[in-house]
Image 1 (tube, rainbow, N blue to C red):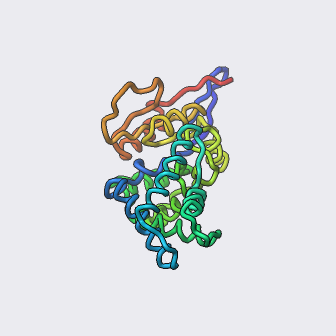
Image 2 (image 1 turned 120 degrees about the vertical axis):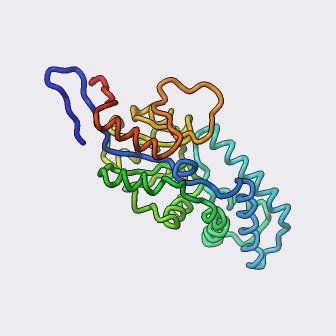
Image 3 (image 1 turned 60 degrees about the horizontal axis):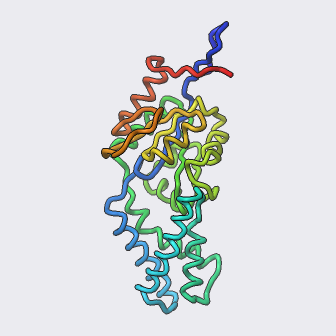
Length: 265
């Protein structure tokens, strides 16, 4: 996989060298509705705090958490920033008038909060085969995830035994910015020593994944397992219904049958 410029031509042919993927709803999915998972998370952190002897009313605690959580999510969506779960929990504990605050308490509380969710994430049937095939083709591999906890993302990868496939893992919690902002993509590309035209991004979100990647000049593959209403953005790349189809598209692009030719400036 190399850069080839025909002699006397103003064009350069870019062969793909790196594959970057989203995590949630691309490689993995929840085994039950999100509302149920979130409730289990809240029960887990509540049980942890009460075992420490902290006096809490569950309904009031849950109401406070949801108010802070939804405010943080709204700001994240509006400004494309990330407010990590540590910050959210610290604010919830302060608003709950808990006197025992500290880094250890917040970190341990976050660990308990995410425990049910980490167990709820499951691999799609074709995830392992796709990742194995891409690695066998010697692609550089990266993961970019919008997530409120960098720790939780790595815990999920380890539980599902897929961290071994990735040369770099970048999360919004780590950088405090979210896809589609270019810096989060550039962090992964820099780590992989790869130029945007040499990379393809595979994800399920048109705004965060597809438009974000293409704004840098990356190829993109939209994994859409459910019908999407509304018009598709112009030049959104390939649309597929599974990771197996995404793998076929990447192979087609790289074997020359659908090679992308970019104008060299």
